[in-house]
Each structure stands twice: as C-alpha cells, then as structure tokens.
Image (cartoon, rainbow, N blue to C red; front, top):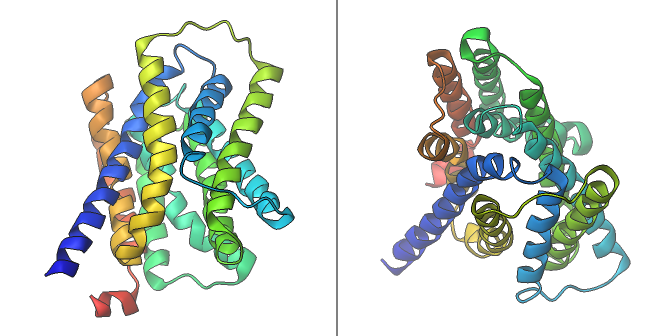
Length: 288
C-alpha cells in the first residue's frame, strides 16, 4: 500500500510539472509582445541558474563542462526557435508541433547510436505525420513560418534528449544539468546583445512569464523530474509527458481564447495519440 501511494504521489508531481510546461506556451506568447525573444530567454535562464545554484553542487571538470555546453547549445537552439515561432503561430499549435520530438528521438537515436525504434514508435510516427498534415492544411490553419520554426525546435530538443541520456549515464548528471542551463543563458545573452535592443518595458505578463518559466518550468521541473521520474516506469512517465500539448491547448484557450479549427483538432488528436502509442514498450506493458 505504501509503495502504491508513493507511486501515485510521484506521478501526480510529474503531471503537475507537465501542466506547467503546457502553461508556458501561452505565457511565452504573451511575453514576447513585451520583450524580444533572446532577451526573454536570457531572463528565464538566468533566473533558473540562480535557483539551481541553491540545490546543485556542480563538479568542474572537462567532460562535465563539455557535455553541458553541447546539450546547452541544443537547448538554446530549440528554445530560440520555439520562442520566435510563438510570435507567428498559435500557442496551442506550437504545443502539438513541439510534441513531435517524441518521434524524432527514436529516429535520431537510431541514426546516431544505432538503437532500433520499437514498432509502437513507428506507428506513432505515422499517426503524428497524419496529424501534422491536418494541422498544417489550409482548413487546419495552414503551415506558416512559426510552425516551421517550432518543428525545427522539436529537432533540436530531440538531440538534447538523446545527448542527455548519453552523457548523464557516464558523467555527473547534476553538473551537466547545471552547465546546460548556464550555457543556455550565456548563448541567449550573446544572441540578444548582438541582435536586439534592450529597450522593452517591464509589465505584469512579462514578470509572470519569466518567473513561471524560469523557476517552475525550468529549475524546479528539472529537480522534480530527476527525483520522481525514477519512481515510475518509462511508459507511465512518457504518457504523462504526452499530456503537455493537451495542457497547452487548454491554457491557450483559457488565457488567449485560442481555438483550433475542426481539422486542427483532429490533427492534434492524432499527434497526441501517436505520442501515447510511441511510448508503449512490450516488455514494460507486460510488467505492469
């Protein structure tokens, strides 16, 4: 009974964390109306570094720093494309398209490390492709530059996930997490300094977005993920994370009054279904 309660608590915390990730889509879309995208990322990840410095004790060595910088670059590239993309597409659409990384991870994992994807991952890819087709059709809203940048961000996030798995099993995970976030801040600040003017105004939506994304969706989410994901199975965790675009759709409607057209809703459902199926693994299903 105790183990069941512990598992339920872990999954509830992961679901809450996923809901916060979904909440970030409309918050970021609202924030970039007040501040340039790289400046926003600089503030978000600077705040995350400050918070993480209270919880993590990084070990400075060449390997840890190197992997932190590599993963940080892919995180920065993904966040940059996603944040800029939100300036041109709906937050709800961005949530579903970002979810495509669930299918890109096994594909890139196979191409780089020769890990064969499961039959469920392959089925999930085809469902998601059908969903993306409907989302990008004229009736679904059409495929615009924001959608393209968001899809590109999913590719960068997929590389981030793969290299995190590859590096944290060999080196100090906490250190890599810390340098990943720190290097993302550095890359964002450099990009902002070179391309943007810091003449924006500070307003309530911007402050809320920076706090929620920096503290809750980045720093605390990483800490909670590291602590509680190991208390559930990979399949259950993957299904919980697949709820992110659903939360993005809900909060986008609640905050921004966004609605997907009928074809877009069907497309989003197919993407979501593909995410769920791609997380199935025969061995783990039998265990449960």
